[in-house]
Length: 90
Image (cartoon, rainbow, N blue to C red; front, side):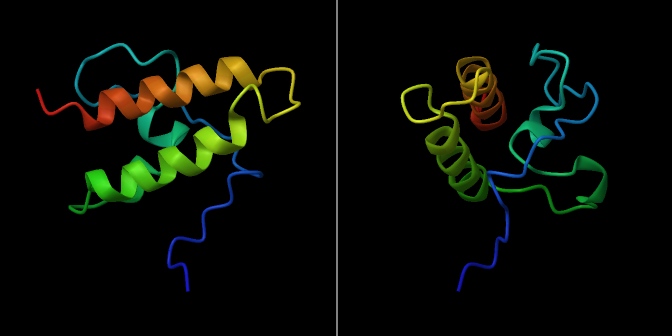
């Protein structure tokens, strides 16, 4: 069973601006774009494996060739940017 009950189809709240590495990630919270709530992390920040799993699920759901949503391309780009920022080891 999938422990991560994240639903890519109902995830629309991207939170307020939060940039964990001082890299511009738009006007949204990079973690929130990928469905994480930064304020509830405590000392356990999602690892790269969990971030990648969320990224793949969201990118499949919002890919412009698969989603009929009018903002699919914009969301897909933001999802990719958030993933890039959060998984960059530099």
